[in-house]
Length: 214
Image (cartoon, rainbow, N blue to C red):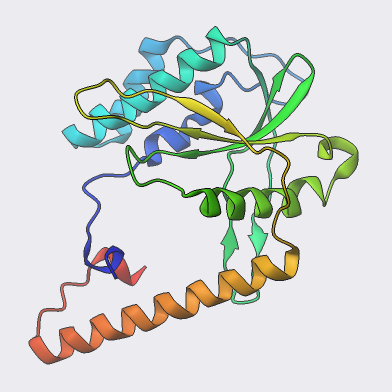
């Protein structure tokens, strides 16, 4: 209900678009040079299309991830992962198209860009469950032993934003059937919320064609 009334002031799409360069992820069969930060920052800024709040937030999170990968000695390889398919024609994707490598250990990871009120533990469990079923379970030879991670970018009041990589502690994950049920329950609830808003708009004549329709 809170989500339906909101309107995001910007998107982290520019950071997501350049994640491979941010992590210096190498494509298969060929080595590419590391992209200098100044060049990458310019591309991210252009993709923000003049949205100053978006520019600040995207450059902030991208630089944190850029520095984290290099300071902690992570390597990365590009991999095109498919999304987790649902019967309603949607796909779930909680990861980027790269695998991180640290001391021979593979890490499959996604991003949670929210400063506060990000994924709850239950939310991370769901995301990691989808990640496990779609990547590790589907390709145990290559990714069966990979860790599951989530980059977070929290910010406390009067403190600088920071980055942390949360690794799932290998506790019990949701089963495939549980993922499907929870997903469909969520889509059903969301459809009900949208219908309620549409009804309100019809009664008041205030339908603005907002972002929530998508």
